[in-house]
Image (cartoon, rainbow, N blue to C red; front, side):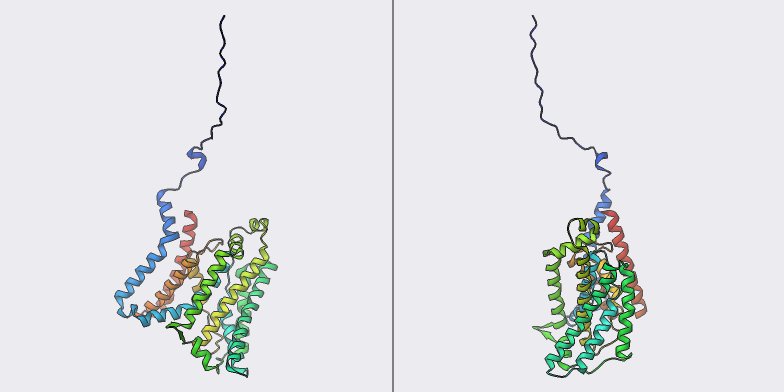
Length: 347
């Protein structure tokens, strides 16, 4: 009689392994290296190379006075670029930053020149009026984009015309003078512990914005809305409220830059700030902020601002004509957009 022996088999499940084909084609090494360089190392390398070239061509470039001058000149672009970055993170754009600077300058100067009372009160009223212009511009842009669904490009282009016309009408096309001397001395040319007051203010707002972007739910909401509005709404984020807050924050930061610029030029100017529209976009994108939203690092944006500020300062020192400078700045903008597109394809 033959005995039958039962055999046991292991019931332990075996995890399926994915073949390379199932995982999808791996990116070439060259593409991965290019993506890493574009994301982390290209801008610092370009900045270092540019500083080296200008230092060789012009010994005065690395002097303390010149570096302080670069800091003063870059303050206004820094504030406006940070403002632009806030909107770019949520896939929006503000073409009215230059007009906001101009209208802020005119209103701030008019209030200070016409108000009566103690000087500190007059200065405070002028600063608050300028910031109020920023709030109004932000609300106007937010209403057009968030409520009426007008593309931000067209909405802010229209508000640019409105703000520019208002600035020219209020100032009658002439500079508004008669600002209090303490305002000019402190916010225009003043220093605190050896640091120019505008630089200290810009550093303060940079640190505050860093905390807002990376340590608050609002900051996370900006990235989420820029990455995918529908997914953000499904996740419970109030997309309209985020957009309204972003536009107002952008315009307020721009208005603060306008107030500081008014102190620097010692008058209210209806033509002030027109160059900052393209420069702020170029600096933000060159610093790694995506034009398509959801991506950006504040530290790299600061480097982007320094890159443009140092480039402009260095070209002035080596006597490059203003026409060539415009050409170079335009090339930088094209380069920034091209880098953004290449970076997107290598991720």
